[in-house]
Amino acid sequence: MHRSNNKKVIFELLFLVVIAILFYSSLFWDTRLLSLHLWSDYDAVLPIEHYIFWYFNINHKIPLWNPYVGAGIPVIGDSLSLIINPIYFLLLILFNNKSE
Image 1 (cartoon, rainbow, N blue to C red):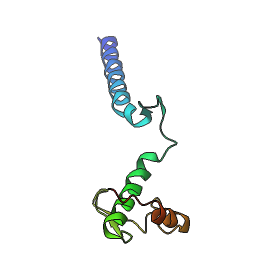
Image 2 (cartoon, rainbow, N blue to C red; image 1 turned 120 degrees about the vertical axis):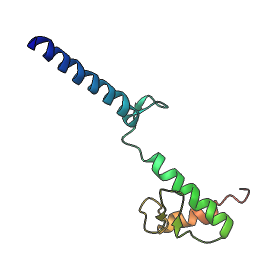
Image 3 (cartoon, rainbow, N blue to C red; image 1 turned 135 degrees about the horizontal axis):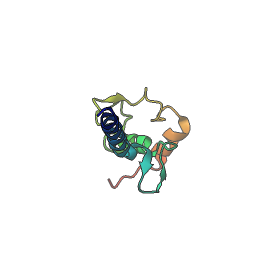
């Protein structure tokens, strides 16, 4: 009876490990490129860049706050926004899409 109890515990632990691996595998596996996705910040930077260009196009001024990320983030204080970088600011002015 003691031996069957050990098998049951091992089976339950193995089941929990498999469920955890299936649940968290989407965090580590990028299905678009079939490679690990931990090295890229593409998904973090692109929405911020799009919002800055969109806001600058509509209001003709630099946004101070991005309300669309979580409960909102400061744009100038965010290191990913690059808004203080003079080269980025020049690109923002020169390549601003007026048709959106």
